[in-house]
Length: 199
Image (cartoon, rainbow, N blue to C red):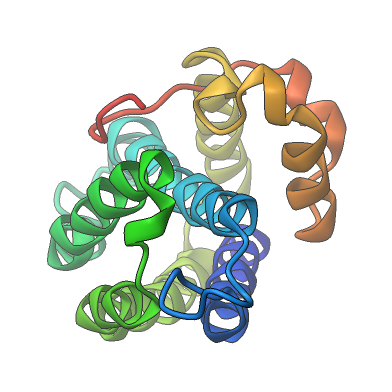
């Protein structure tokens, strides 16, 4: 869990650090439409990754842990935290998807404002959920491993990773995953989106 959250945090940091350097059409001498499209694609991939991670938790891992521990509601706090930032993530996804088709309309200040609207709740969740998982040391470790394995299996079986990378951008997609510590062999596994719209 810590590794997954670390990947999500590092990718968000990359977005916030690089965003001011991706020039919009407001700076015609520095504006490169493909740079904007690539940056928006990166943001889109990150957003769908966050959603996929939380969907797998809510539909497989959390229910499995609660059943194994015989503690209904054990993870309801973590799940309610997901709801605190879900709409903000979805709003940003709509924006970046629209602007990929119209890169001349991209505006970093708009992206940053949308990130700032959900980031505090997301960051709090990503840190607090690790503390919650650490509290599970009182539970059966083999049972927890089974729950995690079931979550991993479900994530791989849920669809194709093409929800992140189109065939035309496979090389870029592999670079993103390698950069963030995700082995490119994962590209052969199946993933799908959950509550975010397909693009």
